[in-house]
Length: 220
Image (cartoon, rainbow, N blue to C red; front, side, top):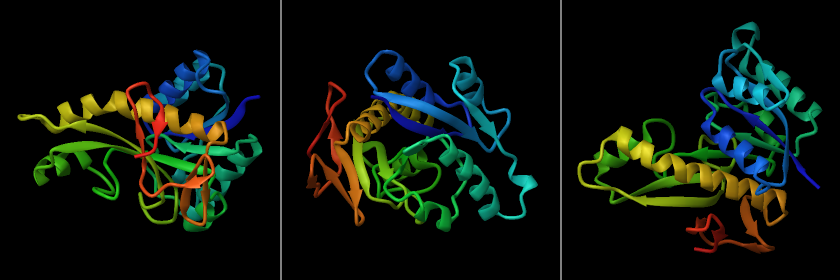
């Protein structure tokens, strides 16, 4: 049985591509019910169309408010039958009233080791801080920007002479593996959110799960 997932993306959709590849390889038991974007020219939409996945583009400028836009967007998400929403490079802040209706059913991937560096320019900020380790996090979405409970993280060492672009390029494959692992764990019923806590195989985790070298989630 496949688990129904909708994806929101604003740009190229490399994380979406990773989900599609894992699904097609039989490693991810999901059905992609909808790929939606706030940008009609988003490459993610073209990739979805090429794989026969329903798509939707809504223009925020045609709505009177963020809430009206989000209500229309998520009405379409709900109509698709999705039980999980994946924010994969979706660059709009969501209305709190909308996120409240999807608690425990919406995740985001963020290129930092949360709670460090919420928001933008995470690689540059990690370099400026002199960090020796960087990474990506997948978390359940809450009304707070990049502030929901963290499910799992992938970590990489920072190298002498790293630039923001080099760091981003080295982290991206780990982001893809992390997202696939987290979506798979949710689809198989291994990961849940309850009262602001992440449960893994029935037990509350005291720290984010780790991604091992085989691409599996393990307790930290």
